[in-house]
Image (cartoon, rainbow, N blue to C red; front, top):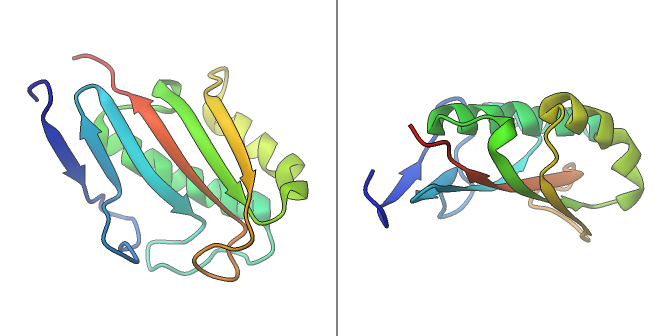
Length: 133
């Protein structure tokens, strides 16, 4: 890929976008992952009311995006987490640590009133530094 080139990703195994966007955009050595929510491949919300399970689904979905771009969780530079109830934070942290391991991305946590579907508890977007080949 040449410097300054833009590449859009529509990743197999993810639910189709609910609006006019793609799963991720690569620009140079950066990958911008769209907000991911706790839905399965068919777009069905996993376990309404279970923040930990939705977080696990989000990171399983994020792994698909990272794999498609040739990256891993160790390459994630920044995440932004949007939660409908910030008190669920302790439930998501162990899942987050499981996927990121020793890597600690920069992070922002924001409480929001609602997300695109009423049963969703959180959404996570990420910025990734792609490894040089």
